[in-house]
Amino acid sequence: MATLKTQENDNIISDFLNTITDEKIKSDCLELVKLIEEVTKKPAKMWWEKMIWFWKYHYKYESGHEWDWFLTGLAPKKKDITIYIMPWFKEYDDILNNLGKYKKTGSSCMSIKKLEDINIEELKKLIDKSVNYMIEKWK
Image 1 (spheres, rainbow, N blue to C red):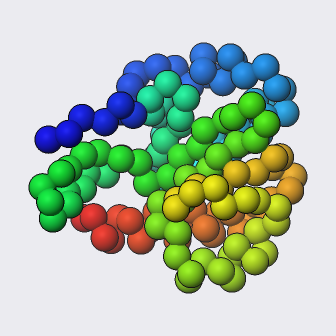
Image 2 (cartoon, rainbow, N blue to C red):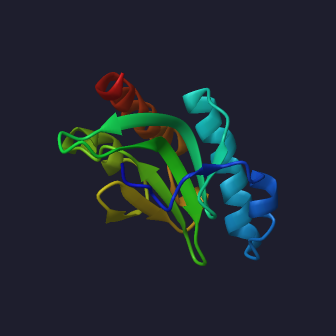
């Protein structure tokens, strides 16, 4: 089985967030952690060195490769915050159209500059829909 570089660890989230020098990004990350914990009903954990994740799942490809990954998470960057929405489907278009200012940056990633640019209720719906889909798919 392949070993991923990015893995769950016991690092302390507050210690990690205190290394962020941009006070706005740090503050927004703290708010996002609370928000995602509220939606997922799971505590935040550190993943790798610079990612915060919520709710781990195990999956196995037909090829035999398998590993653990997170259902949703976030990673502060120098100028923005990446939020991970695991399945990124067209079915989310209604939510995404009302979400606010974000940039899709990968197959499961979006970045935001600041939390005020986002409709929080739509973000909660997006996270909830994504997490519930993944729970059903991988249970």
